[in-house]
Length: 195
Image: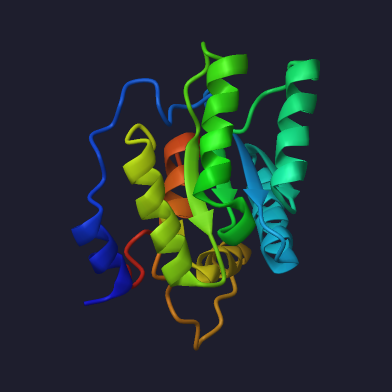
């Protein structure tokens, strides 16, 4: 049984709650925030954004390093009334479930009229990302948190560029692609090895 199946078994997705994980920007727009101190994820996220932008999609991917940067970013967005991220991909360790709860609290205090964002956990260590997603679901069942394994962004970057490495292993996660499919109306493949 692979880790994703174990994750499903121990932490089934809660029933969707109206207003949670819905698009925040206009239809067809997506604003994603990646908060992770592994700069390879920043590079891959930005490259994915450029590919999608070149295809005519309205997408903005912001990359930050840590919780302090994330909370400062939210305050800056608040001051300028800019569009908020509709999806957060957080690191584990210093920017995990505890930071996700701070993000939810920030939304509830500062933008109560705005649907809560998608929150997922992106890590070089898949088991830690799965653990953070399960903890998130337990602490706030409105958030259908999932994990993103370190290979999903790389796989997607190659898929969008049209050049897939012949020995590329398919990713064990699909949360990043699910967000893009739902918010941009794409049909990125989700079944490439994911059970």
